[in-house]
Image (cartoon, helix red, strand yellow):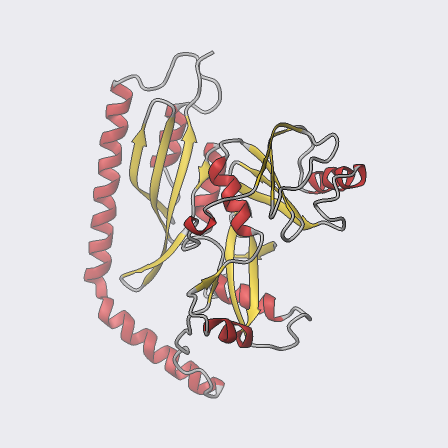
Length: 332
């Protein structure tokens, strides 16, 4: 897990692959990689958790015909996140022997333990405390989940958590990793021009770019702008209706509705909303973004929790579908 810059013209997928190929563990092997966005450092840098496997190994596993492979311990992390509603969460597991810290549903840090998670000793408790300090957690946790097979790890003495759950996870097969970090094992098509000299690749790229620009044309861009203006007008009408219904309670604590709507309506150019739901205890925002950094920044500014980001292609452009959930301020 490390920060990656947002470089124009250089996709994040290629940056992650290039970084994975630098690892001495793989010694020049051709790799299959996948990654998960965790938390932004600023508007141009985001922390990414990535995993890699040599394509030779992926080919051998492909004989078993799985489409994706889940690296440990991500499946257990996802299990704890779906079961828990806590703002601060620690996950200790004895399959890969890791400790991970989540805040607001976002991974803040993890590490492989030097001691086994089943040790249950004061030394293990001290190592967990040092790990939390490295992740920026200095106070008590709301919840700690101790997960494992065939039995959950024993409780280390003095674990700083208000609530502790020790479980053997069940029904893990229901946690489909379609929108989370996992290794895609299906063979991918080779990029156009791969294997050609650099000059030939540049010529192919320029010819393809001109051809695509000619097909798209000004009419497609105009249609896209019209659709987004229609979405924006709908959001403004919903915002006016919410104000008339006095949705915001008197003397709120934390972020109020006016501030949330201001951030949502006056959004960055690279991000827009397609859906807004207001319930008694929460606000739910959904939309599209031109880069994967804007939704994470929006969730930080709102003090909300970002859902899984899904990459998709619309009219030849790469878009990211996102979700942000914001807990409503409570009256004093």
